[in-house]
Length: 127
Image 1 (spheres, rainbow, N blue to C red):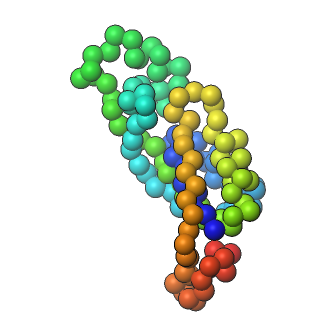
Image 2 (image 1 turned 90 degrees about the vertical axis):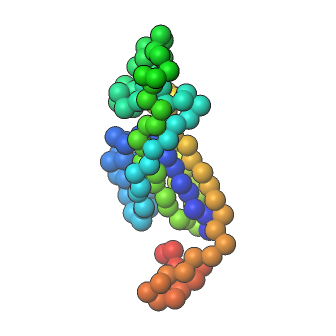
Image 3 (image 1 turned 180 degrees about the horizontal axis):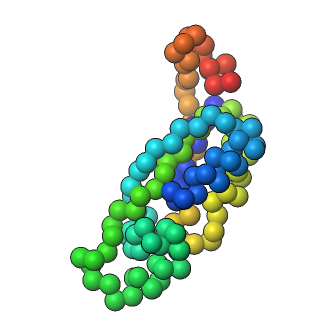
């Protein structure tokens, strides 16, 4: 089993949820997070909506004016090993614009999963 975490733009959540459901992955956890990538948070929320603004906002902007933490959404899903590639494709298809800030995908191996209600473990706890 794997845990797949992805950090995406806030306004892409509805399309990503719809894509997950259409692909047969309705179980999902969503968290509000803040962060920045190698761009240093340049552009802030406006560049989240229109990534082309990153280039304009970076030019001549004083360091104390820069927005350093950009609000994002982190989605987490647990899947079987053979479903990882499909989930990655779903995330990319729903979020790829080709602009800085599209997000990241992290794939983490899970040692164990336990369903609290029944005590089921392993893949049976995920189904």
